[in-house]
Length: 258
Ligand SMILES: Nc1ncnc2c1ncn2[C@@H]1O[C@H](COP(=O)(O)OP(=O)(O)OP(=O)(O)O)[C@@H](O)[C@H]1O
Image (tube, rainbow, N blue to C red; front, side, top):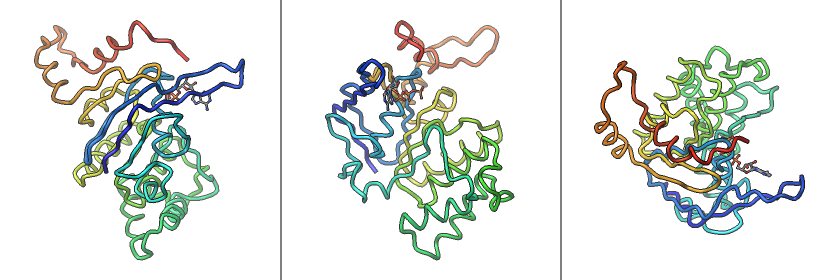
């Protein structure tokens, strides 16, 4: 499922002092089918806004966004997408199983496919033991994993994860890393935002660095590897995080904390 952003702009007018915030500025970017694109950037860079526009939750002011040949507002495009928001909030009187049944039914899944799909996801994300428990009794990591199940139940072609590792312990992170690699093998297209640069470096085919609404740099894994080869090993034997260095060089002079 190819994704294209062409000269996309989004400005918010904050109700406080009617100040304009240019959340996304003239951004052009395309993602190929089967590619994993990581989006990184400091707080307030515009990453979540970009993903929300792709999901059709907010409208862009100008430019074009295409999912395949469809616009984000097209129901046919929406059915092909799975989304994990940055701060997932679900009806907390539902269980993980209820949540997935709801998503599967509303996205038009064939009835006999629903049960096996739910079983697979509960197993993959280690929630089998809590399948009938209400979400309000879940820990943060469990809620995050339930959110991932919710995003994936209808087997979407385009997967959009906003901070998928948030709140996960090392075991949970490993589950998600393995799952993302498995989704890639199946040819899914994945966009994800993360502040955990190690995960982005490990999982993504390309990495986009955003700052203050602008796309500052885009790097392929190949380019990253070449830079790693050029870099002398650290004297203390510590791992060299190339993406972190590039990230800091790209935004260093301009960081403004929100
Ligand atoms: N609904 C809104 N109304 C006004 N301003 C907004 C709104 N949503 C986002 N913004 C502003 O747009 C800018 C980009 O926000 P966005 O949430 O996309 O950044 P981000 O890169 O996802 O940040 P973070 O890493 O902190 O999640 C910020 O300055 C933010 O305050």
